[in-house]
Amino acid sequence: MLLSTLACSAASGQQKEAVRMVRDAKQKKIDVYIGKQLFTSFLYPDTLEKPVLYPLHTTKGTVVTRSFPLVPRADDPTDHPHHIGLWFNFENVNGLDFWNNSYAIPAEKKASYGWIKTDRILEVTNGPIGTLAYHANWTNQQNEVLLEETTRFAFSGTNRQRIIDRVTTLKASTDVTFTDAKDGLIGLRLAHELQIPTDQDQKFTDDKGNVTVVKGGTDKLANGNYLTSAGKRGNDAWSTRAAWCKAFGKIGSDSVSVTIIDHPQNPNYPTFWHARGYGLFAANPLGEKIFTNAKSAKNLQLKKGESVTFRYRIVIDEGNATPTSKQLNATAADFAKRSVAATP
Image (cartoon, rainbow, N blue to C red; front, side, top):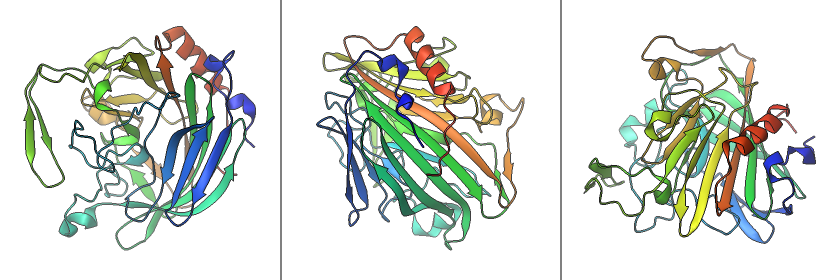
């Protein structure tokens, strides 16, 4: 069982708020409220190629994830339509690409892509910590199952922070190889404001193939940055290893941050960061070959019946300043003490 001690230690002294979930089985959606505010929704309809948490809000209701493609804003970049909210998948599982699959892939090319299909909600509980557990199958286009996924979310929050603890266990239904690849494993797409400003021209392609060029230095919204536990900043965070990485910037007059924290029990800890200036923010422990320029590789292999578990904490903060490295180190140390199974 998950205990209330899962709450982020950095939030100690702050007022804890109750978590309440509202399930819509017809829409295949579960709304997660913390206090009186909608925090996020778990979406698992058949129209999506994977289950996602979308969008993610701060305590004040500020959206920290890109709205495109589900409810696009006028100023949203329209590249990478598979970047939806917060997700978990991988680019190369037995040769199938689960990461890049989306509605934008032509039907004649779909055979190269995998799907993650949620078939059962296992648990939904309210309280100081709300839990949501589900079962899903990672399949090919013939609905043959490669992996069974069991994921448990623990949601908690205060008058300042929102916390997600995600524990995912993947059990092999056949012999499976995660071939070292760049795109994985847990990822989210940041709101436009949290992108890193750039002097380079940017090309964005929408779902109809139309290309828009944004001249370097003309983006008035982007003001974000990255910081890792190892002290790497900005674009230098990409491909480096660290226990946590914080994306931060101003949205309106407030300082807003999203931090992903790795767990010491995860494979290949500390993770590599696939953190891009244009807003892709991901932790990928299975991209070692790419991130080390082929100096080493990490191909994860599971025999039929074997399993692997990944644990991550996401901390979302809004206020007059973002959490300090000392505070995030304390939060990471608290998370490292937790060893929670995905199975209810």
